[in-house]
Image 1 (cartoon, helix red, strand yellow):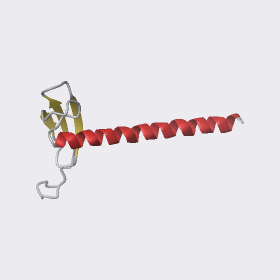
Image 2 (cartoon, rainbow, N blue to C red):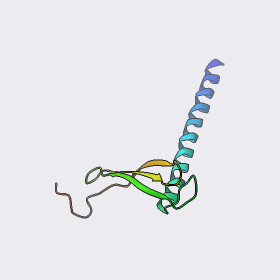
Image 3 (cartoon, rainbow, N blue to C red):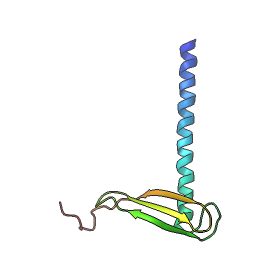
Image 4 (cartoon, one colour):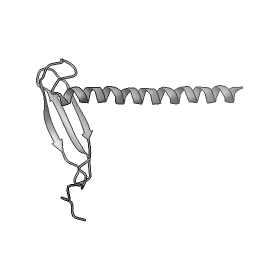
Length: 91
């Protein structure tokens, strides 16, 4: 009996954690859509600017940090990959 309850408890906790992570990714994606339009997700003004941008090399991701000049909103994202499709990388 206790093994069934323990297994059920573990399944509920794991399901909750998976749901929370997927929800977090959804919210983060919606915020990125607004930021790409230049709109701050918090104050809804067109006051978002890029504060810092670091590349990860030829095939690494770019780390981009955004900040709103109107409110205290700041967020960072790992965007895309550089890729070597353009032929700029030599192996």
